[in-house]
Length: 280
Image (cartoon, rainbow, N blue to C red):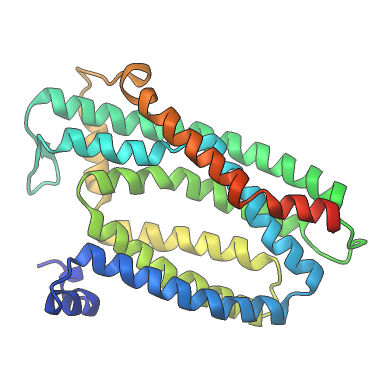
């Protein structure tokens, strides 16, 4: 029996007939809503009005990462699940079955990781340049807000999270839905609490970047404790005899999702940067 099977949330979920994956996902959403209300209090208490403007605009500027990943994580989950259904996992955490499907699965994983390694680096460079240009141009605080180093820290942590995101998508496609939802649950517990403590310690705008790094650390610790890394390494070691055509098999689906994600940015995120630039 795995350790997570003894989790109090899993036990409660079983009593009411709920799947563990759904239980962790629901618990994360409930705590996120609860923590969001408390976070508003901390933001209003420990940040000035000008700092709050930077705080919220940081998030909206960083959301341009959708222009880099273009919905690829969602696509990857579906394609990985499509290939792994033909395989089985042995006690050594290696997949067994038809070489065709092992090769295609391994190729998908390698392609996805390479893709995100490149776009994460590009995102980091672009977001630092865009952020410094934008905030220098529209900062009306007369230098009273210390935003430069917080922005750099947040840019680095977001780039790392962007690189980390395909691994979550791959593990989900491999059937580790409960584990990935459990990670999200622990992050939703740990990150807000760490933010509250950092706000109370007077960390101001540094809070977001530091807590983002802590979220990455929580993910890494969980993956290591659950021995999920061995599964990923096993897929990387598989020999490639058959590949997946990006243009023929993936792109016809991705461009539709990409259009939806990009539209979402203009609908939900653009107003903060516009208000910051026009009203300060």
